[in-house]
Length: 188
Length: 260
Image (cartoon, rainbow over all chains, first blue to last red):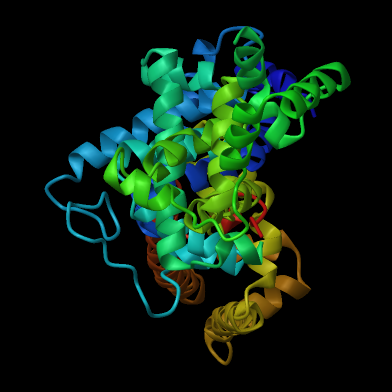
């Protein structure tokens, strides 16, 4: 179904359209929350909160604007706010310090249960070792496939800075993956 | 002398075998005629057992070029940027296994990362979102729509129904048996068999007075029962309303379909 049509119906108070919209985007929004917060329980609460915000701001989506960047912007802002509030109580697997990050060696964490595939889980772990701004770039560009211009607008950065940050983030992630699994590139 | 300069400018191409036909023939003609350039060409030829000196030379000068190559790898893989940069990185990758592995990892990552774009949310996620967003009248309508099926499908429904029927039966039997064997019972039997005038003629008789007292007693009993039932129903409705307002504490799967 056309998502712009869904939005129009939601604005008219069609609860079935709203339900369809939630179902269409809940996996993506939940994934964003998981990648930002690195905690399944927090991510679920956050994803619910994001949809509540979306519901109350449906009128702010400009006509004709694609819905995904708008949704991701709301999701990103909500997650960043949440992370700020949680600074005093860091989450497990949150932004790494200067020390070598600890990679859990045991079974999958609860949030990793949501991730199918060994290679995907390995990447998820590697993403957890990145600096916060690099992780954000990976989430937005490589995982959610936003264009550089969209990311640039979303983060309020010049396009050149966005591009170089995206390159550095990819490199940092590749190094982290090589450290975890040197044969990752070969086995692919 | 100028012919020698001309040969020197062709020397690298001649050694690499990349000269075009006329240039190659000119270079070879000059070599045949000039012993000094023949000697130069012999010196310039790479010996078969020439050691690879690039690592040692780089170590003594700029250091390994890996950092620069890594920096340009993403753009190289995206075929983005300067053509010369592209060729330089490709040349570096030919001789550097570490950077080759990093490049392979980048390529493999690009194939897997989009798979992380959507994760399956927990069960009831949709229901919880809807419970927090839809207007209360819509939620109540949805809740009521599923009330009877949910009630019937409860595991204890049969037990509860049997209990309710038993209570109703006991009350009915007690209500009718309250008069049996008494003067009032006889009076009632006569009233059932006779006409209204006959019953009215008995007004003021002790049996009628007793009947009225018994009816009042039963009425008080039923009033108490209904008051208690009303209070129970009120408590139930209050709890239901609270659960609608705070779905996290309630089984909100009743609001909509489950998310698989």
